[in-house]
Amino acid sequence: MAPSATAGQNAPMASTRDWFETVAEAQHRAKKRLPRSVYLALVAGTEKGLTSADNEAAFDELGFRPHVADLPDKRELATTVMGQDISFPVLVSPTGVQAVHPDGEVAVARAAAAEDTAMGLSSFASKPVEEVAAANSKLFFQMYWTGDRERILARAERARAAGAKGLIVTLDWSFASRRDWGSPPIPQKIDVRTALAFAPEVLRRPRWLATYLRSGGIPELSVPNMALPGEPSPGFFDAYGEWMGTALPRWEDVAWLREQWGGPFMVKGISRPDDARRAVDAGASAISVSTHGGNNLDGTPGAIRSLPAVVDAVGHEVEVLLDGGIRRGSDVVKAMALGAKAVMIGRAYLWGMAANGERGVQNVLSILKSGMNEALLGLGKSSVHDLTRDDVLVPPGFTRDWS
Ligand SMILES: Cc1cc2nc3c(=O)[nH]c(=O)nc-3n(C[C@H](O)[C@H](O)[C@H](O)COP(=O)(O)O)c2cc1C
Image (cartoon, helix red, strand yellow):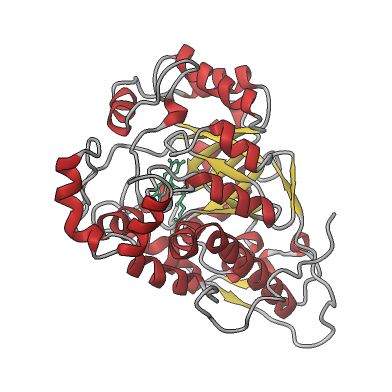
């Protein structure tokens, strides 16, 4: 195991032009830098945004129970997830359709590799799995249930050949498309007409435009990982159309894919203990308790509220991760105290990338690492593996379990 965390110790104490000290600061910079449509697409959250807001707010309801003396000199953060040793228990969650930075998921992969952690790559990502795997060997490929079994397997095999070490199957998507604050338009393709339509908001964000122009052009909306070997990259809407036209997956389909894949296999998007049980029975080796960042069924409680019951149901059999609302190292510590093996982050690293490219993603990972280190110190814990429910104060009704 790697020694205890030191990342962040050489970082400036306060924010500078090239360094931000919190994820909130990264989001603030992202908002100033991104065209409005792109920023809104990342904020997202379906309908009223209840789940999206609760993903974050629920963490604030959890309190700590700190010690003040006999504190450990060193804190151990390293762990293993889906067979990969990582320096701290924060992974990059798959996100598609980013248009945040021209280096896209390759930059994210490099930043994750620099902080020695693993990454989930979306099948709706903007960069091919081969390029991303070359930048970070600790890669898991994420798929939705799109196309017939032959096509699904061919995409998984392509990822395996590229070096993906595990598969993530995301099940929590019910095609909800309404947002009370208005969905940002996603153009069918970028041509002169759409460029002109988006020109006013893009021209107000010259640094974002300049970064793209320097790298050869405005963002393409193709999704190369949805192509089978030998096929051209489809556009986002073609791939989304194929997904919408696919029969919805059954647990027996999940079991079939798990069997074909053979290696580490995560089911992402679980809220309920009975679904967690079914995922484990289908052969999953990991699950992520997740609400898709509040982008699925609005009104689902924040992911952290669902975690304890899922851990109780299957935590002794498989790795249980959590994603949704992680903005601080102390959030990671709270999730681990409630039984998560590790967490995944979505918007936090997207804000980092928007603010400062690859270095911004590394900045975010480093903030979380040092924040974890501080929280462990306050709790008097020398290792993330020693965290227990006793380390946090959980208010009555927190888990929304009224059964
Ligand atoms: C812009 C955006 C795109 C996303 N795309 C995907 C995706 O392609 N596949 C997937 O499994 N999850 C996707 N997610 C969900 C994330 O993997 C993750 O579950 C979520 O962002 C976690 O919540 P957080 O953003 O509060 O950290 C996406 C989330 C966002 C914000």
